[in-house]
Image (cartoon, rainbow, N blue to C red; front, side):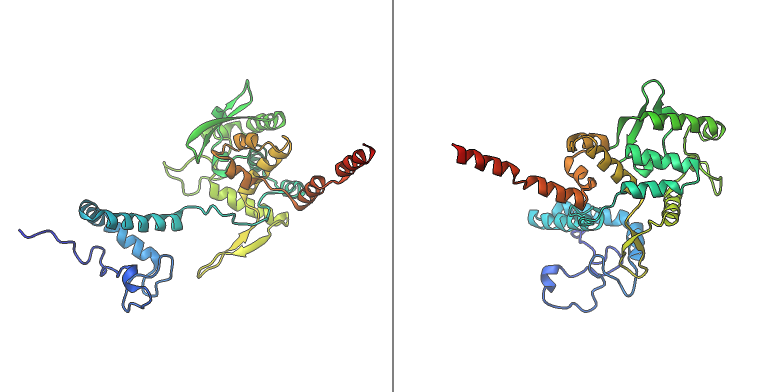
Length: 317
């Protein structure tokens, strides 16, 4: 049997020319567009589906190459895949919105809650605006997560995969108890989830008994329109651009973190604990300082009163 050779066609296409070989030159007939570019022949989804079907075969080739490539070639291959992963799937560390406030102001929050006519959503959005719950955490709040003696809420934090605890403020706790009393049967039928599903619809055994995050987002957008807060700051790129709204359900969390920080003397470390972030930098992205606050701080920092007092002391000596 002869030596094993890497086939020229692993995924159904000719292997592409390396970047170093084509720098400065066009490569006619290359089947691969740049990552993220449009392909006039096949869509990215079609290519992705085909590669997915052939993944076992591709995986075997990669494992073989991993055994026999030189160290330098292996490093280059890993770098290419790592950069593609960062570019396509990881969030940029750079601020996406500049100085734009992605959270609610006090006046906007009041207008938003004034148009909500559904008690379930009124309470769900309250948990987001007061305790800073992510929408995926809010829909899963259960009566079993509430300690009636201590008023503590147990939260499974989505991003860190950890269980955290927050104190439910007294007014929110009382509102929750009244809500549970009013919808006791529905909550019991939904296995204890406070925010039970609106309707059965196309449900299966795997369907969660609580309201879906998609239903919450749709209701949020509807209420935002009624409150005339549906401000658009841009559009997505691509063949079917979609409007980008300044406010989203996550804006309630932004408000909660900013409000907590302001009312606790600007203690970012404490706000980070409240937000259940793993690092302070993430918390600082959430906290918004408006122009008035910024300008007042600049004035305070440059107050000449102290300088004048020192100058007078110098003249008297």
